[in-house]
Length: 338
Ligand SMILES: [Zn+2]
Image (cartoon, rainbow, N blue to C red; front, side, top):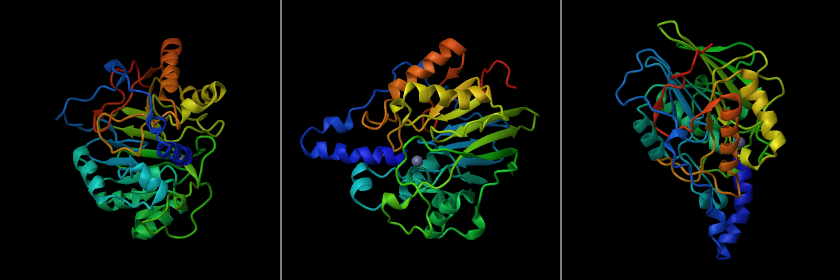
C-alpha cells in the first residue's frame, strides 16, 4: 500500500506548496456511530486461555491467549509524510516502546511480516528484538533484519506447506498478492541499513495468514489476517475462517468489479461471519485514538464502508472497525463458530 500513498503524495505535496494544502489532507471522516466499531473486552479481564486480539494500526495485529502472543508486522514508527517523501526513514524507538507499553505487549513468540514495504517491515526487526519474537518473513524482509542487526537465528522464512506452531497457535502462511499497482516492487538483495529511503523497502513476496487457535478449554477458533487488498485466485479454497482481518487500503479506489472479486476470494471463500477492516488508517500520522482514514488522494474509506454495509445487509456478514489498543474477543457473540 505504501507505494500508492507515497506516489500520489508527491502530487499532494506539490499542491500544498502551491497554497492549496487542503487538497492533500482532505479525507473521509470516521463514523460517529459507535455501532460501526469493534466492542472491546472490559479492561482488566484476563484472557484466561481464550483468544484476544488487538489492532495496532495498518496491518499490525497482536493475538494472545495470555500464555503466548503472535503478531503481524509490528509497525509503530509511522514517520510523517515530509520524512517519507524527502528524507530517509528509520525505526523510532520511542514510538515502538510506547506502543508496546500501552498495548501491554512484552513477549511475542512470532512476528509474521506481510511484505517488505516500510509500512509493514520497517520496525519488524526492532519489535522482534524487543519482544524476543522469531521474525517470519521473506528473504527481503530478512535483509531488513540484517541491516538492523537482528540475529540470524531469530529470522526464518515462512513455511508455505505446513502450519507453523507457536504455543496454541497454528499459522499457515499463504502466498498472496499486493493491492493493485504497488510501488517499489522487486526484491531486497542486500541488508537495508537505516536511515534508508522508502524505495529501499522493496515489496518482495506478499503473505496472508490463516490462524487456528485451540484454547485450553478446547475451543477451536479460525481466523485470517489478510494484510493487503490483493489475492491469488483460489488461495482460500481449502480453508475456512469465521473472522477475517481484511486489508482494506486502497480498496476504496478500486473498481466495483475488483472489490466484488476480492470479497468473494477472501470473505466469501472462507465462509466468514465477521470482517474487521485493517490498513485503512493514514500511517503518516501517529498511532493514537482516534486514527484517521487515508486522505482522498490515496483511498476512499467511505466506499469501503459502503461495501461492508451492503454485505451486512445482503449476506448478514458483520463488520466492525477495530480501534488501536482496544483489546477485543474477535469471536464474541458469533452465532456458531465452526
Ligand atoms: Zn505494501
